Length: 118
Image 1 (cartoon, rainbow, N blue to C red):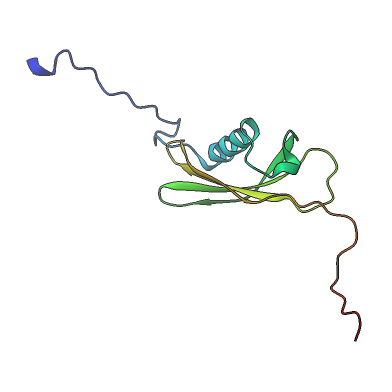
Image 2: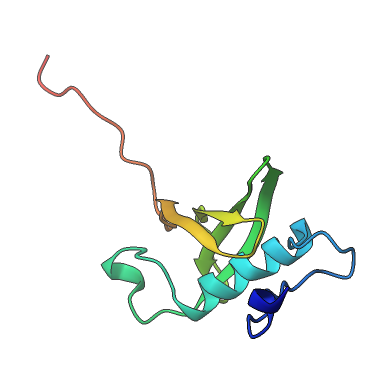
């Protein structure tokens, strides 16, 4: 017992549920905050543009939460939003973040291939 004296007790931060892990709701908020604070690489056309994020899908695995966000420029946007994926450990760390697709501007006319000269 004397050798135990002087050693600090390990302290753990537990959620109110007592599990030591963040909830899926907290993982969604963490992904949204991270995306908002440090934007991903959405291409040169969106550099300096304020982006808007929304949760599209979320999945819980044994060790992680997988959060899929939509990403688009702030304001009116008639194109297709991009997607960014976060893998968040249940202890609250972002394990992986990746831009799956960038927003695509809509409008204009589609370009159709035409065979001329036959």
